[in-house]
Image (tube, one colour):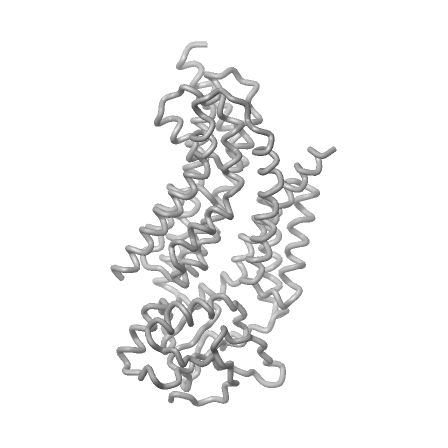
Length: 203
Length: 220
């Protein structure tokens, strides 16, 4: 296949595969954005929502950082928390070492940044593709999922901010009461899947 | 405001750096050489990650209404759905929705008048929405600044009202040690609002603190 044709093939496959992630990232991102704006106790919440979602690409931290930021916890505490929460990410790269050898530095840097649970799952599941095609597939799917996540978080924070101008912020806080369970649920889901894969490996 | 923006920039940058470092670790450590991945590395991942996540689950439950059965019911639904359908989004949304419904249907007594503070109350109040200074939501450092601005003497006992549905010990601890103590308000005392017979609060004060029940008018 020629380069352009490969790109088109990769893009089409990546888009179809990214549709479930579209549902997940926009929904979870929206909740994370709402929480940051409603309970983060910060000014310019949509700006932070946009910056953090574009740079962190870690849903767990987007949730976990909110109560910490709200009480202005020391930055070191939040960093330690990041390492604890995202420790699993340190192992995702191993599966990609061979595949991503000798590729352009910027592309590699971006692909590493985008090594989330969902991208990792999709990228390892599609390893039957030949190397060049797989690389294009990884790039497109990373960019797509990145945009879904940023969109969800930013819109969530914007909605709360705009509503906050019309409604008493306390009412919004009361209405979103209990939404912080989303983070715990996310942990529970990750834990369940880890235990499941652990058990199936042991067999 | 300026310090707040600086703080947020630091948080965004620091979490980005830590997160990226984790993801880049394998490429930096094993990228150059074509050597095999040591066995202990993969087994480390298999064992350590679930343990950390389990610890995080316990930790984050403390931020919820963990003295009631509701977060456990919602948690059981989440895990059950995930085991059954393997659809993370569905499990998370269903669990969160159930938890929010349980809270809002009155299964947990959260009086709505809680949002509107009474006229007579101590200057600083810790609610589940954050710290309030005379009804206005403020950051911890703002609350300290406002205390100084209002001329609250540092050698006097400072009464901090804690809502009885607030049960996050850690936030109280951080607020006392990192903000009140450092600003010189070392004699801060937690007082708890009591709501009738059932309004029993069993929050323990952060070490060094004293808890007294709230009986209405204090600090005008």
